[in-house]
Amino acid sequence: MPSVRRVSHDFLERQGLTTVFGNPGSNELPFLAELPDGFRYVLGLHEGAVVGMADGYAQATGRPVLVNLHAASGSGNAMGALTNAVASRTPLVVVAGQQVRPAIGPEANLASVDAPALMKPLVGWAAEPACAGDVPRALAQAVFEARLQRRPAYLSVPYDDWSAEADDNAPAVLDRRVLRASVPGGAQGDWLVERVAAARRPALVLGGDIDSADRFDDAVRLAERLGGPVWAAPSLFRLPFPNRHPQFRGVLPAGIAPVSQAFEGHDLVLVLGAPVFRYHEHLPGRYLPDGTRLIQVTEDASAAARAPMGEALVADPGAVIDLLLKSLDGPGTPAGAYRPVPGPLSAEGPGLHPEQVFAALRDEQPGDTAYVVESTSTNSAWWRQMDLRRQGSYYFPAAGGLGFGLPGAVGVAMAQPGRPVVGVIGDGSANYGITALWTAAQHRVPLTVVLLRNGTYGALRWFGGLLGVPDAPGLDIPGLDFTRIAEGYGVRAQHVGGAEELRAVLAERPDHPRLVQVDTALTTPSWPGKHSEDSRGKGKR
Image (cartoon, rainbow, N blue to C red):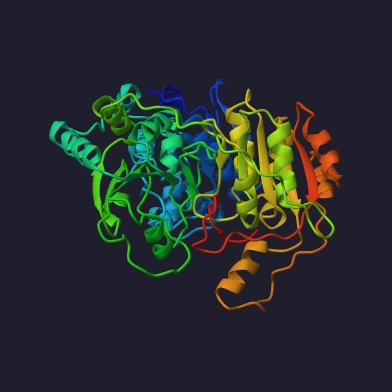
């Protein structure tokens, strides 16, 4: 009989999980032995960057991806990055090495005692097989759990299991398929269509799941059929709708009271592919105005169950879009010309205003560029200047945990080698995932990183004002030179001073990774309740 390792590798190959992101330790080496020729191992220098790269890669491909972590220490290093993957519903299959079985109970070095509990409740599923013979089946379950739940799954495997002989039943997993149909049934579909058709002033709220499911263009068709305003859900991690479309009203503010204010005058709010809602700022009020009804459609049963108001239908939002387009009267008409972009603001002091940087990106980068953004204090400037009209154009750390941006950009670029990818990263954020630059250099990933350097945690300064704590320590980060850091990791880098120099640099199309450092003036996210097309300040910048 083949080994447990051989059966497991064969299963992963049949499932298409042949790209492995990892940083190996001694417990992981037996799993990595004898990898088939079709596998690609992507080495990261820190587990946080490993998970960030895998997150970006899985989001961009829309498929599960394998992550290999080192025991408890490596799993712990990765947990911050996993919070973003959980919030973005990214199907990561995390396999961690464990000590040999006889060494777990005595808590030998590198033994992870009660390994599944370490990752709960963060991951959607976690286990450690009771015996070596169960490893192939448990690995299959991890893959299917991640795919069905669209949430990271975690499997801890004692390293002596991989060389054990598989039993007669182990190869049965090789032909397994687990499919999901989430189309609303007849009565449920009729109920939803009737509610939407009867609405006098419907509003549409779209979440990142719409873009993740490649339903960007279909969402535009539905919005134009309904004719009402469109918002993106708060705490946006993917852009589900063109941000300069005349019906687009921006990203909902992440507070209870301003969200309710936005819905004034609407009798129905239809939420597709989003939780209801991922608030951030504590701005209490009524969830909904009088006379407003909310219906949520999501594949995430947990999100449906925990929503504090409204009705929910657990179904595929894409299938619901198809149903509504088929059932609602009228062909719909294009909503007219897209809103023009205002001229960029200029900085009063040294450095460029972030709007000048984003205007240069908009003008000099191709229209299908994918942007991975982790610069939270510049969100307002970003949405004022950008004109994004394609699926997969925007990625943001879904849980607000810093460290996604740089690794995520590397992962997105590796997943889509034919598409331009730009990471827009703040100097505060960059330090959390800086080691991803080395991986980009080793794989010669054609990625541009625009590093915005303002020497401070800008979003935290904004929150200091919001919370009445203007004198908090630890907000400034002077003296960082990312050109020298990048070159140390093997990435070509340059510092750019003026707007025209920046435009000339961005017009180049290198076939290798590069970092462009730009000094920028301090800006802040918009204040809560003020209409703006931003994704609200999260974390630091």
